[in-house]
Image (cartoon, rainbow, N blue to C red; front, side, top):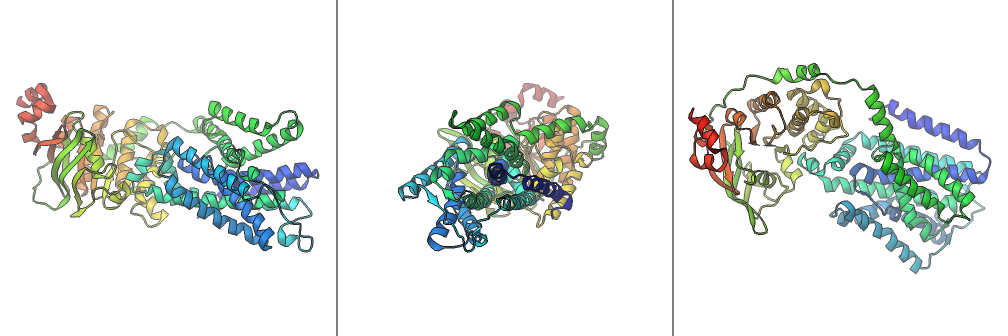
Length: 589
């Protein structure tokens, strides 16, 4: 639940803003004070999708305009109160978000942004074609309160502030929940989020549905404030640009960013428009354009993150080497050669005739093997042998051209990564994929959600996983500040937090010094003793021969041999294809 300490800042801000607005008597300035929370809410709605997932939307005016027109036309044609129409508008905006998101989320990057831009432009032309170039809301003198037509303009500001406070609180609740953690993980590394068990498409659809609902609701309120709705004023490109600009200027991916952006930019743009709009047409667009340029050059993630990072660097104590040593040292034991295990144990993963081609290149060719319970299988081979491609086939990042991947006897080939994670396969990556803005603990919490039923249980699973890799003392450090060894251990913790039966480790020792590699290997050995079955790709053969129970050797995508370390490392085909003459001489000695 959201703590009172988190509610206090937005509540105090809202009360202070309300106090200032009540002292304003000029009607134009009062209108500006009303527009600030309107655009803050619209910016928060944009931020809920784009700020937290990283998928930039140039088309949020589609939802805003739907809300405005639904509220206006509902009063004109059905004489319905806006108190009822605004919730209806929110429902319509949510439905529009779902309908838009499902096909559009198939796109990535600038393709997604450009596709989103098309929606409000198309709707704008539809409304113009239908003859709704200018819709004026009817004046209700008999029951003005029932139709949200206040004689005192201060009431519009107070109502706008109430909507802003509600949206801030909702965003804070989301930010601290599984919903928000999933979105942040998607933003920072979608592949890692999928591998950790997050159904990225489902969470993005939830985000755009809620985002569209909020945008439509505040669009409906905006229509009540101005009493006139035109296609250009609610569907125009500048409308979407304002939502994007206030959020980016203040700070994306944070609840305060859109509020900060609105408080600074909206009064500036409106006052300059009033003073210089006749001499410089489009001055508002100029202000928003300059704001974006300044943000890109000086604070790419917005004012909030820039200031927070400066304060963090100034105030955060530096972790000493002894801090890390105290946490990792308990897990470091003398490395021992792996004891051979019988090949007659329970088969937890079976690969049958697995192949994958990229055009004419056969990256994986007819690979078959079995992984037994509690076994550590080392997968080795020269660069380009198909090792990482094999892992990507095993956990769903690639679909096989042919063959089967059986997990517990069930064919899971071609399933999406989050489904395979739910089936019991955890994964680390050759190129580390941390969620850089999150703490170590929050990174690991994301991996725990696949098994946890509640947020509290996820945090408990995560804390246990962090302790198993020896990072408990530094669990609150932000991932972007970690060393390579700490990042490797953190990725291990994130993978085991979901309590997998099988762990796929892709070059976990890459980038580590000899002593650091020994520490990480000791942690992996302890995980194996705790009952996790492991398949590992690694080039550090000195550590591998002491770590694994069995080797599988690939060359040009095909298996050339498999067996015990002492047998495989003396195989002439392996020496020729991978280990080289120096290893042969070392093994002979």
